[in-house]
Amino acid sequence: MTDPAGEVAVVGLGPGSRAWTTPEAADAVAAADVLVGYGPYLDRVPANPRQERFPSDNRVEAERAAHALELARAGRRVAVVSSGDPGVFAMAAAVLEVADRPEFAGVPVRIVPGLTAAQAVAAKVGAPLGHDFCVLSLSDVLKPWDVVLDRLRHAAAADLVIALYNPRSKHRPHQLGEAQKVLLENRSPDTVVVVGRDVGGSAERLTVTTLGDLDADTVDMRCLVLIGSSRTRVSATGAVYTPRTYPADPS
Amino acid sequence: MTDPAGEVAVVGLGPGSRAWTTPEAADAVAAADVLVGYGPYLDRVPANPRQERFPSDNRVEAERAAHALELARAGRRVAVVSSGDPGVFAMAAAVLEVADRPEFAGVPVRIVPGLTAAQAVAAKVGAPLGHDFCVLSLSDVLKPWDVVLDRLRHAAAADLVIALYNPRSKHRPHQLGEAQKVLLENRSPDTVVVVGRDVGGSAERLTVTTLGDLDADTVDMRCLVLIGSSRTRVSATGAVYTPRTYPADPS
Image (cartoon, rainbow over all chains, first blue to last red; front, side, top):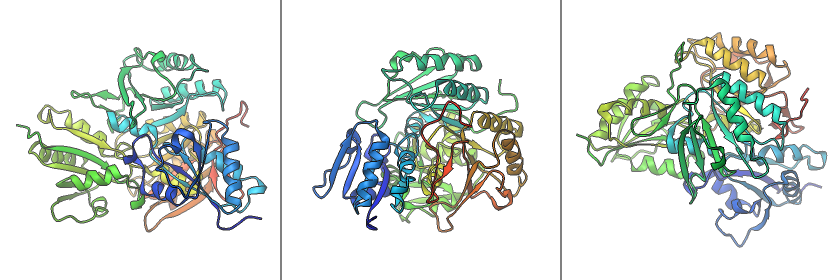
C-alpha cells in the first residue's frame, strides 16, 4: 500500500554558495522529514532535529533512489538532495527511472531545479555560454567512450561552446587528454578554455587558458571545463564571453 | 572619468516564478539604484521608490547595454534585469561586448546567474536533460540560417537532447517546421518532444508530443521546445526523462 502523504522531492541546491539556492529548493528541503543524498551535499543543509538524514556514497544512485521511494511509499516526505541541478547528470533521472517500476506506482515525485555548475562557472568569468552550446559528461561509466568521442567531434564541427562535466577522475586519468586531442582536430589551439574548480565553494579557482595549453593533469572531478567556440574571446579586462552574433564566415 | 562607486550587475531572475529567483539575484536587484531591462522583466521586481527604472524594448540590446554602462560610469549602481539566465542567449554577452569598448574601461560588470527556461521546463516534466544535451537558438536574427541547420544536423547525429530557444516568431513562422524536417532526417518520428510555454508564469502550459506529431503552428516565442534523444522516454505516470545510461547500441 502507498501512503498518500509521502512524496519524493529531488532538490538541487545549486553549486557551492547558499546565495545560489532558490527559495523553492530551500523550502522543499525545510519541508522534508527525511533527507537522502551524498554526504557533503547533506552537510550544506542547516541542521534540523525534526529531520532524519541518510547520507550515502556519491555512487549507487539506483539504490539511493529506491531507498527514497520506499520511504515515500511509507508516507515520509523525502528530499533527495543534490548539488547543482538534479536534472543535469544527477539524481532526477535516476529517481524517475526507479519510480517507473510497478512497485512504486502512485508515489509522487517532483523535481526542484537548481543552477548547474556550467552556469556558475560561466557567470564567474563572464558569458561564455552566450551563444549555442552543449553540455557533455566526459565519464564513460554510463556510456561507451566511443559515444563520448563522437559527440565531441560533432560539437567541435558545429562550433558549439562545450561544457564538460566529470572531466577527469583517478580511474579515468587519460580521457580529458584524449578529448583535447579530438577537439584539436576541428578547433584551433587558440580556442579559449575555462577551468572552474569548486565554484561558489571555499576552494574556488578559475583558470582561463587555451585548448592548446590546457594541462589535463591539473583537472580533477571537482572541475568543470568550458571549451569556447571559435568566437569566444577574452576582453581587455579578462572577461570571457561568446558574442551573441555569429557571422556567415566566422574565420 | 569613471566614478568608482558605479557598477553594472547583469541579473537573472529565473523563469516566471519568484520561487526560482536566487537570493543573490534578489539582493543584486534590491541593492541597485537603477534598473534597466525589458519592461515585463522589470514588472517582476517589487516596487522600490528609491530606484529609477528604465524599461525598454526586448531588442536593441547593444543600446541598452551602453546606457547601463554610461549610468555605471557616472557612479550609479545599475542592475540589468533579465528573465532566465542572462548568460544564456541574453544580456550578459551583450553587456560584456559593449563594456569591452575603450570608453567603458574600468566600469565593473558582474554577472548574476539564474535558472534558464530549459531547466524549468525539464523540471516540470521530469528529467529530459538527464543525459548529454545542447542548447540552440533557432533565431536567425544573429546568425545565418545555414548555421542553425548545420548545428541541428550535428546535434541529431550525435543523439543529443536539444533545447530550442526562440523556436518561432511572427517574423520567422516557417523555421521550426524546417528544423523539424531536418531533425527527422536523423531522428525517429517517435522521438519525445516537450513544448513548455510561460513555464512558472500564470499561463504555464506543458505539452508532451513526438517529433512526428509536433505542430509547429502551436509554438510561439514564449515557448521552449525540448527534443529528446533516442533514449528519452515517458514513464507510466507521464514523466519525461532521459536515462543516465547510454548503451553501446541504442537502437
